[in-house]
Amino acid sequence: MQLTWLGHACVLLTGTKKVLIDPFIPEGSVAQTNPDLVLVTHGHYDHLGEAVALRKTTVATGEIAQYLQAKGVPVEGMNIGGTIILEGITITMTPALHSSRIDDTGMTGNPGAAAGFVVRMDGVSVYHAGDTALFSDMKLIGDLYHPDVALLPIGGRYTMGTREAMMAANFVGAKIVIPIHYNTWDRIAADPVAFKTAIERTTDLTVKILRPGESIEVAPAS
Ligand code: NI
Ligand code: MN
Image (cartoon, rainbow, N blue to C red):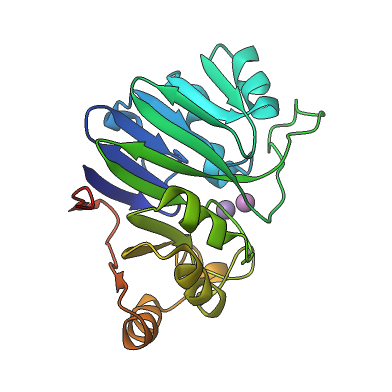
């Protein structure tokens, strides 16, 4: 499976199918990725992003799914703790310690909880934490779903910073850790090199710092 960080929290998984998580980048559009499935962790605009315009089957909480469906987007609603299989891809919605709001003037209802996802495709398991604080049940995500890759926010202010994300990486235990949700704006400035150095000095985990648009190949764990 190929994993591409498009920037901010937006990640494209390319294997048997193309799965796009949190379809927002600060400049330009993600429309050219032409995904089969879109996953949205929560309603904040820097995650919901282009979900309406993409009009692809979109996986989100029931509340966000209802909002998208009303705008003509095909949806698969689910909730935290649940697992669905779509087109051979296993998708589990995980908890996230965060808030949610749909930044759309027409939205007055409850946009539901914020979440993360574990996606298993072609034998590779990827955990996208969404926007979240550190929580110790990340250990359960490691124990239950054995992610090969953990995508963790490190930008602070709205989510974990590097200090908390180091512990998150240890809890999840994925061999490859990719920092996300940092340096998009000054308010979420973080040093990914210091994060990488600290983790790699104290664990056998590898931190891959990607540039926006950069991809890595992830093999199934043998
Ligand atoms: Ni958020
Ligand atoms: Mn965010």
